[in-house]
Image 1 (cartoon, rainbow, N blue to C red):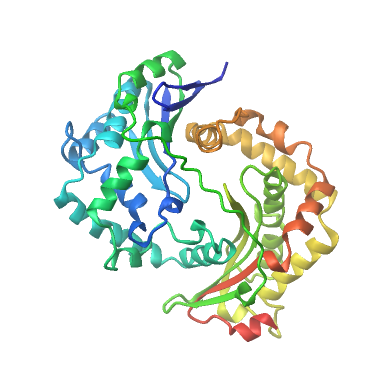
Image 2: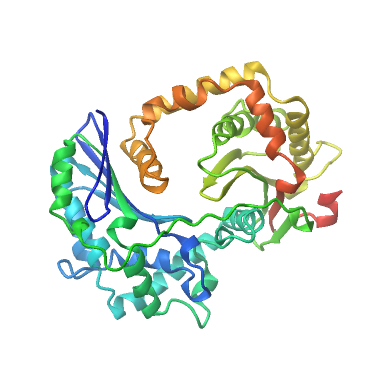
Length: 435
């Protein structure tokens, strides 16, 4: 078998896929993200713990000790905190896979959280948030989640500067409590793509701190909050940011959770509208009228819902109708009205299927692509039977018809699911946008 799975006695999960090159990708998913921070004093803790796991353990007392371990073998190591999870990532050559697993497990289970290191890292996290706050796309994303996921933990940012400036921010006692609560073997798993055998990886895990016994009783860390469509005046937002000359635009629609099969025709639609150079929005805004340099569409799906996002940026003077051009906003509305009324063409469906099939095949050369796919499917979502990455097109996309896509357009592209948001120094007035 190309993909094999195993559940260890302490609850730790493993999914392994055989690789054909001498590279091992190790992704450890912990079911702990910003949605688990349900109290004000907990905001930002998941991200902060991710940082602290790089600061030192009893075996490797400093961040430099940890870094040198990976540097001297030419390995790549990183981590990310998301809404639903924290993920630690290592890529190395096969001969160092066992060593990398040992060090990664030590970081995850035996970090020592020195007060001096915590005080220093608070400043680093603040600087990281300052950098993100300078990006217009950060404000668009926060507006989308605050509006379309209103009433759920998904509505709050993963991290932001304000989390670190209040009296309740990042108390050491609460940080350590949540670390012990969520960093437990039954609440995590490893997705690994390697030329090494399944049995050799199991042995490496058996000999590592991943075999730590649970620190406290097992808890259900899956949080699901159904998104309820609400239609109100919040469907349009403008965010004024001095120094941002271009106007950044997002038109987003509330869609479906990760486990809903609608996500597959939505993904095809995403590419038809803004996934490549001949897509509708790119061809119209850039090639026909020369009004934008960047435009694209994206889809996001979580346990409790998802959204479809159309994004572009342009000169503020290009936003509305002008004697020399129809205006970016009007053209986007034109595309949306057309797709809702007429749907897509058979030619577009054929093109997007060819595009998706080609991209899926090309992505197979990236070890981490398969690692992420397997980890999300098996560890984050109910330990389902995993469809191998190489079989995704045949399983989920090949059978999709024009009718399927028309149905999801009518289902989700509705006013009660919509948010229109602008970020920049010279954003139009709300009254003008609404008109």
